[in-house]
Length: 320
Image 1 (spheres, one colour):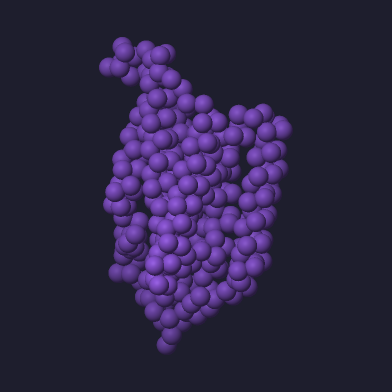
Image 2: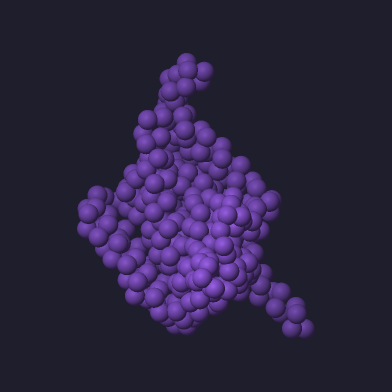
């Protein structure tokens, strides 16, 4: 575990202070190389878990990583809107994403610690997690997910009222001085917005991954590997995000499945006095880990495939 944290910290330091400190618009080749590297590292890490701890934890990691990565792709829609809302120069967007994602990772780590403590002490919390995921799945399937619009959160609105703010960027600087008065640049608010917005996404993703594994180490590393390739994925997909028309359907299936799985687990380890007199329901089936991985792969894979087929069909019609 210590070795893993050291390597992951090194990844983020290089990404943030070496690659991220060179403001530029990454090419398609650069994005593909970075994404391929992080995906390969996730696969290798899962294989190492398999070698050290067995197939169960490894499948839990792969399931969690795929779920977090899929949800992260959906979250890129909001990142595009945030960058547009704050008019971030394209050459600075890579650096902004690096810092914002790092902030989000730290906040997610705290969220995971709280979630792990709740899961270990109160098994009934799975009823809440499960119900929330099923509710979210229905919203996503019906197209009611409010991630499509960006609204400044309360923290940003408060800072705008009490601080001097300039509308102009000055490279990567957060503070500038004009006529003897210090101003915050929009860069600070972009950092805060991306970081805090990603924590809001955690209300979907953290309960989802706790439905796949209760091991905080696997939960955290799954999130890290999903976030590591996110900024390169942002530039690679870009305008292609709106072509993944069936991705919300795939995500709703995944979230709904995990929500049901959580409720089944809560019933199987029930301690609530008003359900079966506080006794576990042994007859409730347990969903095996391999089935979770199969459902995730099929749901996301088929949604991507049907999205590609639909876009090709539309392009052929428009070409006529």
